[in-house]
Image (cartoon, rainbow, N blue to C red; front, top):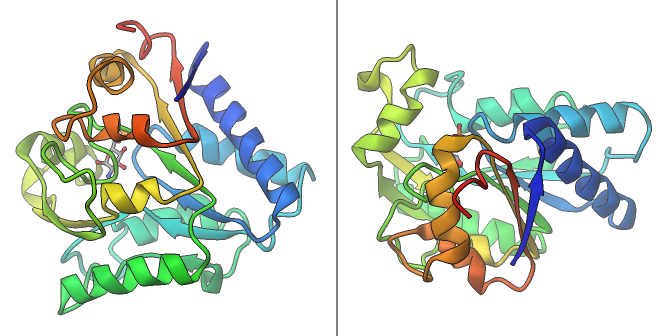
Length: 242
Ligand code: GLP
């Protein structure tokens, strides 16, 4: 695992956007896995700016989701599908046909999860997966005690994650879904390159356990230690407990 300490979130975003530009230069139709939450926004801002400045032709890039809420009405602005469309797919000018994600409104949720795992594999696998980290060390929505070999499946959110995400739902925890679909940890580890960005002091403990602690399902992000090409980019505050 490679750990890169940067000055701040903007520098982290620029560094990772640069890696994506390099990837697209080598492989124009690369499959880019994206995460939601506040942390990756500087990556997307920097990527869109670099693409608009002509750094690379991103028109063939393919985008895929890491996770999704279950049960939000179609088109809900806080569904991760709508969020990724708004933050990444549309600003890059990509058609929806180059964007894939699990169906959080499917009647048979497990069938939708299995279909998504198959779709990722038949798309050739994820080339670069961007990850954030929850305060409890979760990646995607793989809460503590998730199997490190897990595949895409339905999960129940713990209370702390619903509290953390209430800010996207008018600060009303009642509006935050209880259930989600997430790529499993095993699914995430299938990506060719994992890039985790963590910023701010609130992530310092989770980062320290991810990088320096034992590999444990209690800290799902510690599974990155098992991957042959994992990069953890942290700002000085998030690195403060390393
Ligand atoms: C959610 C997402 C994760 C993300 C986490 C942290 O739980 N499912 O992918 O990493 O939030 O979000 P933030 O970056 O806003 O702290």
